[in-house]
Image 1 (cartoon, rainbow, N blue to C red):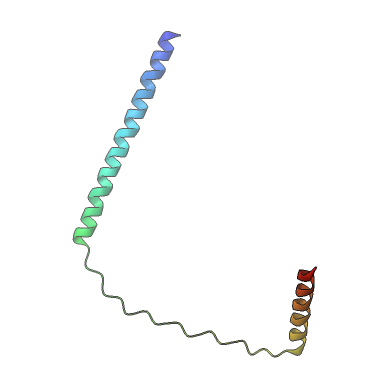
Image 2: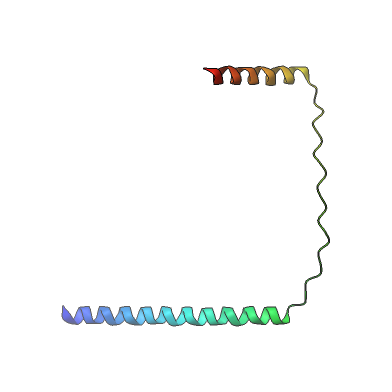
Length: 83
């Protein structure tokens, strides 16, 4: 049993060590690539000033049946709020 635990601990240390080394190399490589991109990247062109969007036009829907349905729904909603 003692030998099995010793092997398990050895395997755990080797595995964790491998992951630590891999992640350290990954962080280093990412940092180097980031510095290279910033160094060799051409400057970005200036962006033009953003234009304000045009105000939304109200819907010109004068359907009497739609107006009646919406009015009835609003009246029903308001009557339920008073209860």
